[in-house]
Image (tube, rainbow, N blue to C red; front, side, top):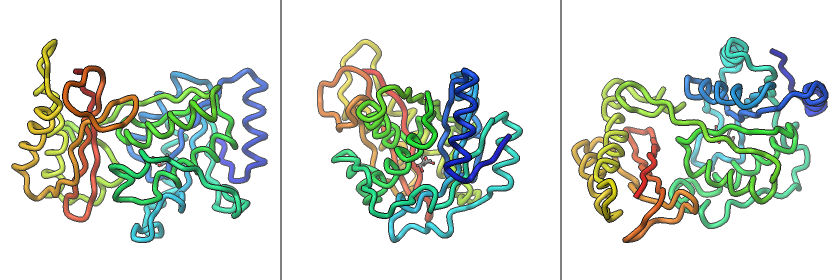
Length: 283
Ligand code: PAF
């Protein structure tokens, strides 16, 4: 696996791959890699023959109260894992490479960017879209892979790609879960044994919500939310932020009488750690 830091080195490597007729996939990450990231790479390998992984801890997506400096940086072990996974190119730029022009405008995530995760992390999604679009411009991939676990992020990226990158295919990779159901996340490293146990209740709540749907019948979205909320209420150590149903295509909250594909979202704090998860529900 080759590692590049500068945009010129990246361009040269991508040009070479494309000249050889290869389809290029991009998997953007912030490093601190776990099995969830490695599963994104496996998905990328199925859709392309040249896989680029970026590792960049993006300052623009951290709020003033979020600790950008303390975000885990484990480049050496990450790089070894990527080589082992068969990645072709690691792009690990500096801030200057990613943002050479401080006056360049940032992307706007619009009103959906201010709801749910965006409501507790103001500016987060604008910063996330800005870095993702910069990566798309630099790497010029044919496909890019993102995890379904970060559902709101995925929705916003798909919306941006449809508008600004019509030739780019966005691929959604399924959430990877522990045996107990907990979705893999970089933040799980902050959970001690007791918190880890409590954290499993998030996925249990999602399963209860999904089970409240009557196949082929009329299910009110409220019943789904109530069933999920009842499970989380049994674990008061988990401080619920929201359980919500949104239309999968628009990310707008659902009211009564919905039919189609929806996402059941959950966010809760377990100790100091904020966790999110979601599941797809068809009404
Ligand atoms: O999901 C992440 O790790 C980040 O938000 C992303 C997409 C790599 C952008 O910094």
